[in-house]
Length: 171
Image 1 (cartoon, one colour):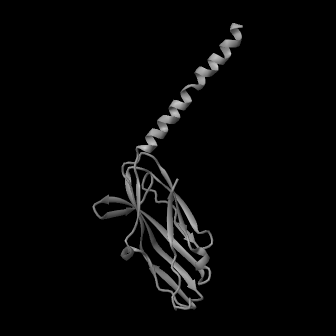
Image 2 (cartoon, helix red, strand yellow):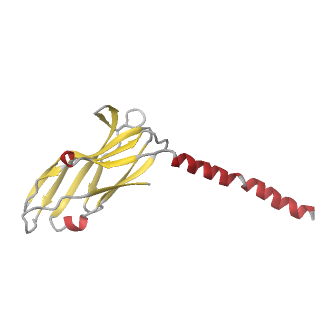
Image 3 (cartoon, helix red, strand yellow):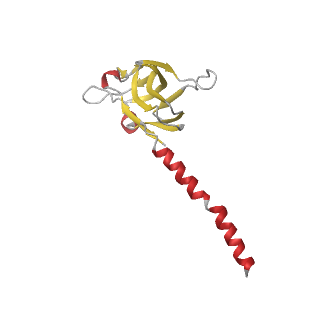
């Protein structure tokens, strides 16, 4: 009879610390505030599109991320939310995403990892409509469009092409 009680007692003691560790991790994650703000419209990237034209994109800011108080590396996903509208105006649109870290007041440098290693070039297109990247905590970042190209083959009735709209999520 004692043997039947010993095994469940040992199993219960071994499994007891798991909920405590999980709750502790959640408490740490909850205490690391972060904020994301869309850039001012004046600082946004611009494109001058018109029918049957190949063009480029004027660089600009998309989002500002404040994660200086965050202790964790965070996965971000950037989406183009209106690809269904863009496909009626553009044959292609390739946009180079820039990620910058704040080094001082109004001072930004391209993100580097480890020993000065720059991240791979990141593009977002109409075909995929999204891209992902991981950023470490303890810093403030801005997400930009550094360059891009497109081919506009049609314009709307009001003689203007549709511009991409962006959405940033955090996982």
